[in-house]
Length: 493
Image (cartoon, rainbow, N blue to C red; front, top):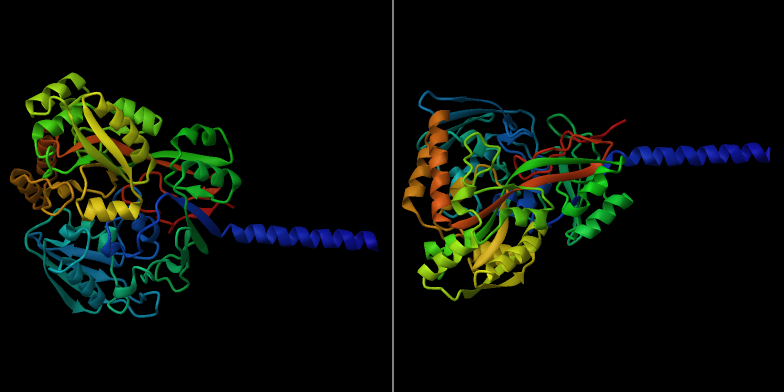
């Protein structure tokens, strides 16, 4: 009798253990390198915001899919007028925000009007510059009239900055985000993790996961240890490039090397001497050995670029030869610019591995041509405040992961402080052109202008190094937009 009691007890324990294990497979813990400054994608430029909330908590009229294509989201369909200026969106019905308030055309009007208003704090306000008026036709129909045709409009509406928010909760989305997505905000332990849970009243296809935890792990060694121990089950953008081979050799894990929209640059303050001198900027660009940089900072992962454009784009031009590694030419250009003995400067670096390691390599290369660059490490919030917002810097390294963002060099208030009317005119032409062949021609002209003017030294395209449990399905291979879209993620049975 005692024997059978032991057997039954053991079976019960095994069943409970099995049940607990099965239940755990509805949850997922993802590692992220940077903690977002807040959780409102309509009020901040940090990619870390979208990495948590895009498509999970917040949705727009359209969305960007895994292949970079434009897909319906809150708008189930749309029509475009013959002159390309009027977009009429038909909205999904029976959609609710997470606080129970109904979604309708008034919310779309509120969100778009708010984004392109004069006092808008949207970090990508330029996305909405073409909008003239937003009109509510009926509760499920919105008409958007543009000032001129814009070939990127539907794509722009798929950015995280263009998600639809409600007037009732817009003011508190930074700390308590309320959207219409398949997941709801649960909790945020600052400095540690953000938890989202399944939205049981989601209007669309429900998520397979019950809960997802975004754990902040900026240190590459800690990221490796967390994955190996199973404390983290997925790192969609894994920061420890040197241990990639270790995970590739371990059948417990899947390693996926994809592409991103991340143009990594050595940014220079174009209005601050000596960086206001073209020859100085050219000298710095020629002093950088891109291959050595990619090998040293990225362990060979990354594609060299010579302008601000992704190599996977059909209109890409390989312009790396324009600023090829040539330290002797660098010294010559510095002498012509009046800096034969070089100069001292600063290099402010945000936390990502590519910036910190890349900064050490670039500082050493600049030293070879007489430029002494003092490295100043910054936390992400400091970088956003000092460099991105305050323009208080000499040089910096950062990867711009927004899609179709060539136009940042046409903005008067952008941190590069680059001012070229001819380039701004090219961007205006691109935005007003729908013809694919003509757009390609204009894109290539714009790339050439940047390669010549060197408002930043263009380094490499950031790879997407994904490492996750081999049983996880549905995570993106590539990064067409800065997101960890969990809508189709599940554990294999």
